[in-house]
Image (cartoon, rainbow, N blue to C red; front, top):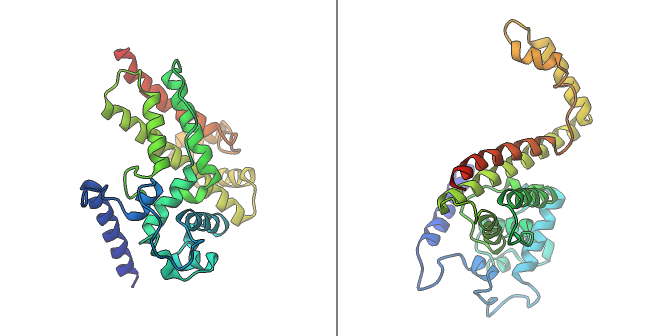
Length: 270
């Protein structure tokens, strides 16, 4: 049964990608629920309950994920939260994968305003990355959603537009700009997910991050020696592995190094 469900999910993702690649009957080729999020489709002509709307469904699913984690989200559970039958949801969202896309879009929200006309690309991209990180930290369940399609929802495309606009004066080709957005957004998602994993582990152990780091360093001391692990030993002796840094230190370091690399790409063209 588990194998069949996974095959169904893969099939559904393939269908979505195929639909996005071709126009169906002169339309966008997107699922009806995604078209509705863009304002391209009206609500169903007939509905089991006039008060049921796509935004209400997405909002209920988001609240469920925030309270109990992404794994708690199912069509039946969302329907129960709304006090309607599961089948009534399918008039608005034809599959759970579509609901996840809409939930992710709600988690992102709209991007920050700008960039300003004279804003340097690095300032703009840094602000873009920090704003995206903030949105995902507020909704950590969103980084558990597998990326199954390119941006196709209103907020995700707005974030893409904002990021590309930050790079408008770099002299880079459009393909390079898109690759930079993928690089930066991937870093942000990974950093948020790693931080969430570490927080969950600390919560389960009952230890603070400082206690967890110190215990890990002491364990490494027992497992390693200077002859076989000279680099690890040097880090231990320097005290770098005993205490965590500030909550933003790793993000700042990683983002700066990525933007340094982009700057090396931009400078010869400037």
